[in-house]
Image: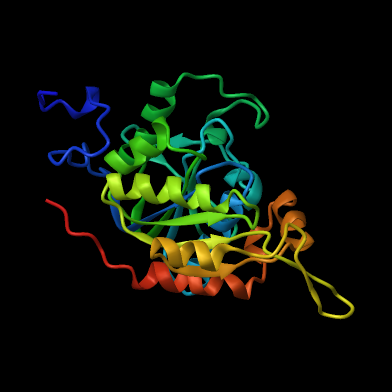
Length: 275
């Protein structure tokens, strides 16, 4: 198909001429990391939140962009109730209790449980505005919590944001191979580096005896990652404390040693050089 050089009307996923359409006009974000999954229900938002918290705990200036417009959860998880504000030129992100910047569609709804019943182009356009029209200031790391799958929003994020790498979230079920494959193939088509894989809900550790129980079956993540040439960064346990803290909006109080390798991978990831 002949290129008309109008990226806004193009659906091609692997165009060599494609550039990021707009730069962020309200600040300097040093590194952008997207947390993705080939399907829903694997705990992608939890991994996004824990990764952001781990990076912030190391003294970095961190931001969270909630790109899951129809299923936003970051405001709830971090206990952010503020509405989106503006200064006449840019949108001002909210701040979590410990100073992480955040933007989410929930900050623009009258009630947090109001549904977002929009078609794909409108959703994708809002995600793009979250990047171009928000004053992110000086930010070391931005964590983008992506919706599941490989549709409009992931395509918009990969085309419009300067993503430096992705983290793929999976679960121990048989679907793990398909989940990883879908995310890996999209990343390859979009020329986005894969930092590694996180297996969530990997096991449950008994409080009394310390024995690990594999509720969803023995993990196959290591074999799958090896077959695709990617690194298994971490296995996160089933921990009722995480659910409780998310429900209470206190994820920043979570203690999760298993997320440290994920934060390490983000920290050492190379900044991509773009024209």
